[in-house]
Length: 519
Image (cartoon, rainbow, N blue to C red; front, top):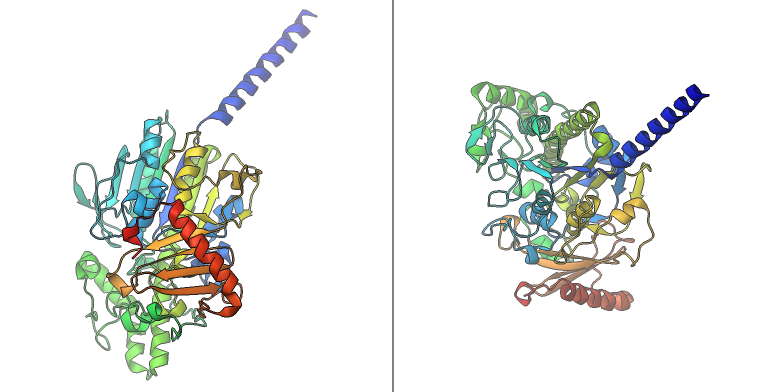
């Protein structure tokens, strides 16, 4: 009897210890790995189902969506690199966080931000890769950031102590640096790591092993590639048409003639060709030689030349995405191999969307869907449900409140976003979710001549105000998803137009947009 008693007592003690350990594990603060690419269009991510992604798959990024949560209607607040990053960090629109455009403004890193708050609450924090906020990072225990936009080949990195050049391809370097930091972090603390890629930002230089990856792939030409911009005056005045405005040397890797080793126009040789070694330049030129020769040796109409340039652009853009996808897979494997996946929230996003030939364009900036809409997928280890899709309207002002709530921390009142963690968990909301989004782009005059504008978007309709010229555009996204027909002033939409004007005014007041930014 005594032996049975001790056996039962042992079982009880082991069970109690196991339950305690499980409880401690479940209450352990999560790590957060935030992976952000630059200018990664939804069209180039398989999980979103666009025809382009079927020809250039992204299996590792798609895995995050399949095992986590995919956001189908996620948007940015200001579709330009630095301002979007400032919004992510602060949970506030550009006018409220003080960083409204890339040039001429500096980010105040001392305001409440995700890294500041997490660091103050015991997290070890780091940012590696692109920063692009014109000031040194604040709130990070460690940083190694690209200089300005960064370079694809043999890039410079800024640390707290120095600036150094690291030889290699930028996406691979950022991946290796991130893994190295994870290897050497303080394991007694949870971590917050911002792993931020340069790719697929302009000028879309692939890893050398992928120079020819898509050279024989013909990607679909958007139906509105030859848009005439009827009824959309601001669109007609832009300077971001692939055929007309893409730099033939810098962007499209075109040379001066048959068998030439000299690029056509490149205004920034110091960040492109000048970063390569002699051997790298030879490898690059040889990889593109046959296709460049074909451009000169085959007679083409102007329309055919435009389509040729589109294919060259897409081939390079999607080849840079290939390396980003590989990086996501590599870091995912690292988390698994080091038993970190069970307690690490993994986020994949981009700073905004991007045009892949729609309206004839590259770049972003616009409130039009391809630019405005951001990819987002999150793997939350506390959730057992996989493959959930969220269709509510979310925005990058929501990122900071969400991550803070996930870390069990209060959200500062000044943050203008709202945590979407309850949406991820499928919880019943105390208050209805938002029914409209506010957008504001300021950078005019500037690159690509995109007029300053703001606007409001609901699940179906969009109203845009080009306020310097006091011109309006309105779209029915159900009937016109590619935003080709401006229906502003159409009597059939009179009631909806009035509703959108009212909502536009309400959001301006809700977010306290200063009058100086509205005219």
